[in-house]
Length: 483
Image (cartoon, rainbow, N blue to C red; front, side, top):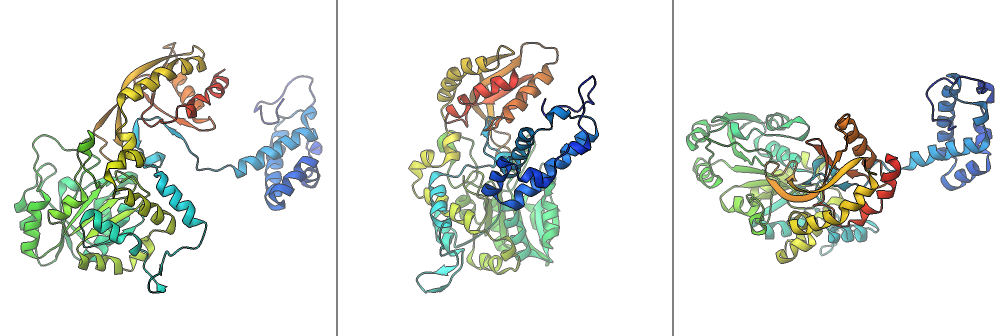
């Protein structure tokens, strides 16, 4: 019997282990296989994990949960080795995203393109010119590595970057509106992940929010009436993670820009997801483009790097040179700046946009979003009998037409036609528990498989599965887990 297999006190004639049967830490460390672990990993780690394992064993012995016959050096060695392996196992792991949400906030959002991965591997293994001007031979500015590229792609006069878009908004408000008023429509008081709300961002930046209009209708005259001596900015926030429909009214950026210029206040646009290409050209719902917002008269535009852009987590700030310079010089900028890893990945991702004809091949986010439903369905038809065999007749496995999402925080209300597999328990009785057991077994695979439960079925949307063998190679283990 395994030392860790039972939580019930043992009954019967079998003799229970006593505290005096426990080995010492020193004895355990001198067992040949444990000594080999010390040679491989060092004394500090192995000794600490040995003590931890021994403490857990002692607790089970005192509770009468271990047989004396189980107190053998071979059992001890297995236990200590398992403890060391668990300590060294990474907590951040790759998974198969079969949820149907391509840009999934909880699963790492955008996948980095191969060009970015190659650039990272080359640069991170050696010193680099992160803040060194190779032409001048002296200290440089890390923004210079991507500023000209961002300006070329967006038409902005200047650009700077920070570690995410929430930081970009916070820094912009702190630099341009601290102690003064920012005018924003009530219909754009968004909340993003983690209950992070626009009014809270304003307060943290030291700006005073002035709400105008109503939840569903805001007019140009509302902005005009709110502008006063203390107004620092007019602001637009793109509601990319929800939609208000019906009797609605919003003021386009081009109209608001005319008012902003006439009254001498800058117009800032937070695009959130942000896009540099027209998604409608690829059969996807259209999103406002960064370059369109600048052309419409927005003075500063902020957007994310790891959503529709398809790169690493980043907050990009582009716009008028004088305003961007004020943002760049703010003391908070250093606390929010990007490190060399995401900066290198961002540069490589932005360079892909110089060749837009190749984006559906080179940019994983766009490649996944534009996959043919016919191709996805064909993959599902091949996988269906293999998955059915793995679940051993306990579930009905069917090919299904599905509706997915572009992103959980990017266009979440827009459905994305897809295909995949649905798994329904053969028995309706206890069906919910059967689905949870199946979902748990999939998550425990070496490469965890993440699906979604909906309408009494486990749904495996295959849009994001480009290499089917990543699933097929684990089906035998799934069958064993369900046995």
